[in-house]
Every structure is written in C-alpha cells, then in structure tokens.
Image (cartoon, one colour):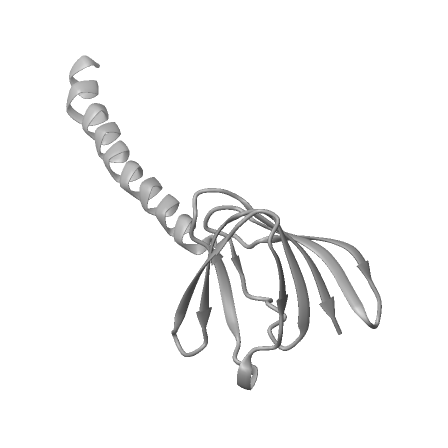
Length: 131
C-alpha cells in the first residue's frame, strides 16, 4: 500500500496541483482585465429642464456618459486629476481644485469624450445639467 501511495498517488496529486494553480491565476487576471469600474452618480433632482446630481470617481473610475452636448455647471467638492479622452484619441488632463465652480458649454462640433480619474484620490463633483 505504501508503494502504491508513493508511486501513483503522490505524483497524481502533484500533477493536479501544478495544473490548478496556473489555471486559477489565469482566471483572476482575465477577470481583472474584464472589470472596468465606472464612476457613480447620485441623482438629487431631475425634470424636463434640468438634472442635478453628484458624480464620484474613485481612482481608475471612468465615465462614458458625459453630457458633452449640453450646458452644465460643475462644482468640485473633492478635487483631483481627471483625464478626458476624445473620440479622435486626443487627451486632456484636468487638475480640479476643491470648491472650483465651472460653467461648461457643449463641445465644439459635438465631439464626444470619456473621463477617467488618473489620480490617487476620489474626485467628487456636484453637477447641474441644463436640458
């Protein structure tokens, strides 16, 4: 029985472990690439004329729903660094300071863009979108 254990069972267990560990590691890395965190929105008020909300970007969060074709007022509650990436590939870095109020007009020519928090801290904005 001891000989059977040493000759067949130990190598079989070692082989199973050797196969399972890289497979588990590969699954985790695929999941990490597939996950894309998005910024969160807390809507305070909305009607046919305005939408009022708070947007929070954790580090690495993105926003693909920027209302770039609408007028909006943005007040930075917690500052940080955001990066805009336009549909043509152009990038623009924005350093936002706490308390800053900005009036944003629609982008020229209806250019669309996404926003990503490239900093190390949360960025929180209070936004009023005019419809």
